[in-house]
Image (cartoon, rainbow, N blue to C red; front, side, top):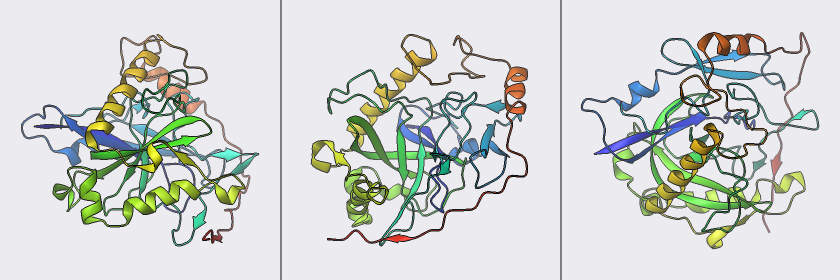
Length: 309
């Protein structure tokens, strides 16, 4: 039997650096009659602020209509864009640099992201803890997920995924794991059990993924990214150990057993956490968010970047 993990979609299709929550499918027990897609559909989004502006936020609600934190309140294992880690309830927000929205560059032949880009809830890559396999500390974020299914997801959508493997990106000396996964409700999901199946049934996809992560910051004037293990994709078993470690780091964070720095740990469902808040307090936090009134923002003009040598 297998358990499910959720993935949160955090990236918009048009290339804004923001995104969804993905649920990963991990070894464990599943309740009889569980319906993964239905379980994930219990979460809803609420948009606040003006789209295409730094003020835009996407908050998540549960089945009861209560505000939750997608970082802390969606369970990693379930039986049935970019997260704002420094803000209460961790809404999804656009990435901003020097007062301007950041867009994912269109690197020929790819337009924006080449998969659904999201994150695993209840995981944290501790910036103070060295990864034993990369010898680099974490990047202070939830684990990123590249979901390779056929459906294009919406921002804030929560889906169950099957973990297939992982890539270890080294970003400015920090370990930034990129999990490879597939929506368990994808028509072809049953064919994918491990990273080798991606090579078999989607030839060229992993090579394109490696190249995408290697080059995506070059249009900003930055050097090519580096990877641990010479860019080798590690298999499912390895990826599950990465998730397990990141989940333990998250638990220490929520129980105030380590230094979380600027991470906001406010949550409504981890009752034994010192950062737990009531539904009324969560609603007040959302309603207190202010936005720039009637200020117009223009979408950045999209261009192609040809980086071939």
